[in-house]
Length: 247
Image (tube, rainbow, N blue to C red; front, side, top):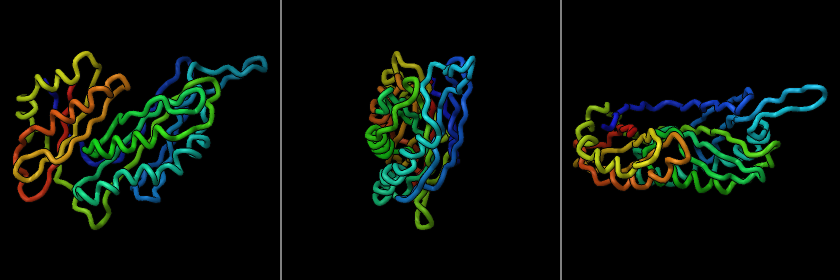
């Protein structure tokens, strides 16, 4: 059974991950995203311990907050363009997203996934992932490392955001399509959070998906295709947004 969960428009706080046998430090700032926006990343790093003049590190590699910011700060504008380009077509879009990076020993991203998103638009999310994958970081000290990077995006004073719906408005639709959702996620570990926009006349205008882990990312496109076929309640003269969590 799909579990519906309402997600309001809030800045997403980056989650702190723990490296095996080590403590971590993190800091984050989320901003309204514009072509000149910037946001500070959360550094997922292993702390150092000194013993007998030797530096001991956890299993995860290390990049300092300054090293991460040197790459992700300048990239904020390009990532935000993925949103502003779509906003010209669909003015109801807005929300927050958190990208999780796995950075290889040579500084190349191994994968990037949306671990949290209220944007509800696969085109934006995929564009951000593609641009994030093209970034190059300094070589982490001690091997591969991870970081999360949050952005909050809104269209400004001239935009008209969608109305937020409680999950009860689309619960029966998710139940009707339970089998198809399960086929998309078969054998994968969730949860998968699907955010959709209901358009006038009850069609689905846009869909986005966030996942809990990299192994679940293979289900995203299938879930998007499935949800785009749904017929949902008519929101009236303007768009409405709601989310469903598939476990």
